[in-house]
Structures are given as C-alpha cells and as structure tokens.
Image (cartoon, rainbow, N blue to C red; front, side):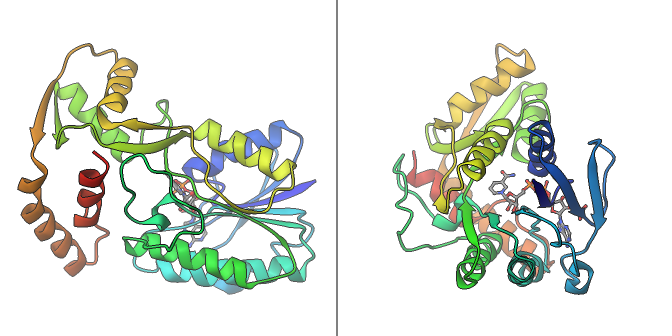
Length: 278
Ligand SMILES: NC(=O)c1ccc[n+]([C@@H]2O[C@H](COP(=O)([O-])OP(=O)(O)OC[C@H]3O[C@@H](n4cnc5c(N)ncnc54)[C@H](OP(=O)(O)O)[C@@H]3O)[C@@H](O)[C@H]2O)c1
C-alpha cells in the first residue's frame, strides 16, 4: 500500500505520515521544502502553485491524502486549482482513494454548541474558508474515484503549540490573558494525534463522503484551563473585553490587513462567531 501525502511537511501532515509509516503504509510526501523528520518517506519537491511540477506524482499511489493548503494571496491556485489538477491526475493514474482535508470553517457561523448539518447551506466566512469549500466542490465534480472529505475544527498539540495556542501561551507566561467576552463561548477541537488516528481509521474502513472529525466542544475558559495546566500555571489574571468594544478595532485591523495584502488573523465574522456561541 502506497500513500501520496501532500503537505507532508506541515503540522498535521507530519503526524499523519508518522502514523501511516508506523502502520506499514509506504509514503511519498510532497512539499516545496522537504524535511528530514521521518525516515522511510520518499520526498518529491513540488509546488502546487505550479501544476507542471505535479507531473507523475500520483503514479503508483493507492491513496492520496491531500493536506497542502495555504491562506496567502495565491490560495485559490493552491487550494482549488491544484486540488482539481491533483484529483484529475489521481483518476488518470487509477488511484483508488482520494482524501481531501477541508475545514470546519466552511460551515460559517455556528450557533451555540449546535453541530452543523453536513448538508446545510455553507457560508464560509473568510477567503481561506471559501477556497477550502471550493476545493471540496472541485473534488466532488471529479467522478471515478472513492472520495473522502474531512472537515477538522481547531487542531492542537500541546507539545507543538502554533498560532492561537502559541499566543495563549505567551499570555499565560506573562500571567495575564485577554479574554473576548465571558470566555464561555464554545468551539470545537481535535488533537493532532486523534485527527491522524481517526483519518487513518476512515481510510482503512474505505469510508466515503463528508466527515466532521472532532474530539469535543469546549469553552474558551475550559481550554485556557488546560493550557495553564500544560504550562504548569495555577493562577493568571483574565482581562475580559466586552464583545461590543472590539467591533471597531477589529474592523479597522481587518481592513488594514486586506489593504496591505496580509491575511487577517482575526475578523468581525470570527468575533460574531464568539458572540453567538457564548
Ligand atoms: N491546523 C488546523 O487547525 C486545521 C484545521 C482545519 C483544517 N486544516 C486543514 O488541514 C490541512 C493541513 O493543515 P496544517 O495545519 O498541517 O497546515 P500547515 O502546517 O500550514 O502545512 C501546510 C502544508 O502545505 C504545504 N504547502 C503549502 N503550499 C504549498 C505549495 N504551493 N506547494 C506544495 N506544498 C504546499 C506546506 O509545505 P511547504 O511549505 O514545504 O511547501 C505544508 O506541508 C490543510 O488543508 C488545512 O486547511 C487544518
């Protein structure tokens, strides 16, 4: 059994590759900057933004795990056009299964702890989320291969904090953590290890269709408590910002980021998500 893993050098890709190799699956990894982390992986240097570099990468693969994505300016090219090119190539080379990593963000704003209906109308609320949804659509348009679409929520690993988790840790270290609203808003999470395990279980079970993989829904306060435990901190000061007070600063930040062509890490829609899930 041979798997082609795009985004194999990324946060989730590295764990998935580790678990695939451990279960005896041969792995060919794709990235622009292959890494030396895992022994036994065959690396192919490819840039999904340059479809010609994909030539022949699917040859000999039984399954493709397509994780590579970006949230930069060329995200349409990488997240949608390259996904379409890759699945077409997979069909040409008779690959049996195609597993596409989409995102929970394609659902848009979720009310309370309500679990979205997989078929509900989608309202992606960022450029990135929109391209992930369009990537799904590109996959669904191509017939002739077993297709599995995974929509993970926030993926974390305390042993390798990144993005929001890294920021939370900085504040914990400083002893004072800004909290948006009461901190009782819910969000869905899955650990990196669990995501890789659940993905491999679906793959081995030859599952198809759209799957929402998550461990649990937690409040921000609960998650913060876990982060503090991991950091060995018992007490911190929480600085609560009422949601209404953040609309103007976030509106200005988001617009400035868009003007300068930088991906906004926070947005009015994200604030709205926090308000509605509290
Ligand atoms: N992390 C989360 O919380 C989360 C949640 C929901 C969904 N997801 C989805 O899960 C997947 C993996 O996420 P991640 O957090 O592991 O991402 P990541 O750490 O940012 O890794 C992205 C991977 O994509 C590769 N890549 C990016 N642009 C490329 C290009 N032009 N050509 C070839 N490779 C390219 C990168 O390799 P190089 O830079 O070396 O090329 C890297 O291996 C993504 O599809 C993401 O949308 C993630």
